[in-house]
Image (cartoon, rainbow, N blue to C red; front, side):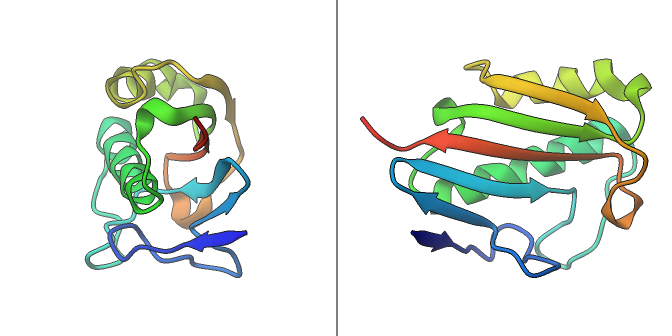
Length: 125
């Protein structure tokens, strides 16, 4: 197994890795809309937060030598299911390959953010 770490995405805020490569797959931990430059949550709306989350995911994918096109599964967590359409409007700009996905509303997310996304990407041929 290989641990993926980049300073272009938020550092882990607990005892976990940004991502792990195991075999032909990358398993990325859930990303929330933290600006990696200062550790702050600056985005306010669901659209802004989703964009920040997707950019953070992109940096982790890049650090592992891959990209959004190789993502095979996402799990999306929303603080409010009423944000589903606005979340999707941003999400679909990044995940154009339409990976398999689960999307659920949860009671509360870390640092009271509006969304979190984790991904699995295929690294093989």
